[in-house]
Image (cartoon, rainbow, N blue to C red; front, side, top):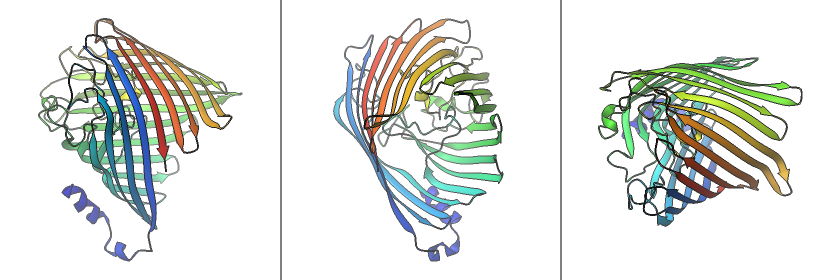
Length: 400
């Protein structure tokens, strides 16, 4: 944290103390979640009732702002293995109790340039490579400096240097589940908005310096391109996204490998009903451990099913062919943003094309005032990889 404070002072101009009077705004949110997991091969089910509270304050003066936020996560029912405590005879629910400083950042923002220094949340594009892991109670933040430059309308360069990743494991994190992972991570994303969508080229250099985190073997360099957008077709809206990246070892990674990433996703919004289909590939090299395409800084929960079976890509890679269907309503009586969603995933290895099983995910959510309620279910049917698993969530989110 000392490094963060030094950078905060370095970025602030000498006259900042005499800037116009700051406007103070409280920030806060709360989440109550019940989660239960049944996993074949384990003696007992996992059951967790956790409450997370985040609170802080943001001060703004002209183009400058400063934000400080802390959070606490409390397990009211703790019949689960949180990755650090409890018996591993129960399934993992990765929400350990925690108290932490989640954000402490200084930001300068103008229409053409913005820089943020300190502990912050960072997400690039769809968070497939870098994200805040917002679904987990503790989330993920970064000690970093991030610059966003917009030299012309529709053109943006987004560059970040981060030296510490504050993981979801919290203050008690240790061993292979560290509370913080150091390294010289360099992230760059250059995007151009076109009439058909946004084209982005990116380079993500991920440095994992902790020996306990797979012995440096998650350090990698990924270079790629992404295109996403949407177009109206009469009363129908067509949305699409396509990505490709090439990844290889970097820094002190002892492995010598190269693997590819592919994503193609198309969805149709019919003004209520929504249908989609996609295919995502995290490729493999020679089948050795951690020589497949890895994304250790990603919001992994958003991809390849909510059962979380592929947060670490298997040695032979994984191919995910999926279809989605849903229906949304702007309002149903007093409820707003009512949403029903279903997804089916079929998984196979990238090498040798072996079956990895299938998964069904279901979601229902609605908003009432400042509170969003959701129910979520995931069923993973194993076939040659992992074990049969059922997960169920009930969740209330409130935002100030």
